[in-house]
Length: 284
Image 1: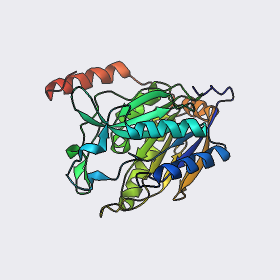
Image 2: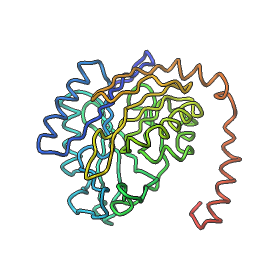
Image 3: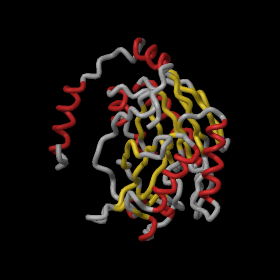
């Protein structure tokens, strides 16, 4: 497991590249080596980085999905281990017992060991993003990951447009929310507003990396971005690799100031949401 850092700093690499083509695994190894050379402790890949963007159509393919010991999962673990870097990647996971498919993030330490998973909760279903035709939404809320010295959490793409998840992570003490995504360049300014608002209101860093290029007629593209806990944009670039260093002291300062010091009121909101869930027929 990646050793904890005593200095309250974590250097991240946002890698805006996908690796599903025949030369993909070689390129992945090269990029992770470059991330290490540039001082990164943890690399974050885009949404489903070893899969083509299948939600361009409603046609699901059986071999897009795999169990936890499948080829894409194993390839990402090997790449992290050989480069000696933590890695946030992902697969379309197929449960071997139920056949249920989900978009699952894999969080790996620098030895290639699995330290956490997370399944995308909020799935679009619209032209170019027919995701409910390919996998089902996750059933577990995002949670804190303590494998890299600075506590982090993960969301995926559309999850950030429901702020409950980012606020939950902030309340758990998460200092950085990492968001792989696949979005169109024309909508980027709307996403940027949400990233900045979620960073400010959760009092943590928000970082997101996008699939870089159009695929199957879907105009995917747009910058990697890193926002600090005060809502300031630190990095906004279309570069293949973006490096940013996070500092716990910046998070601590933000949480001592407005709006960070406001009470969470978790029980009040939990009770109200429980009532709504019951009314809508959702399990509480």
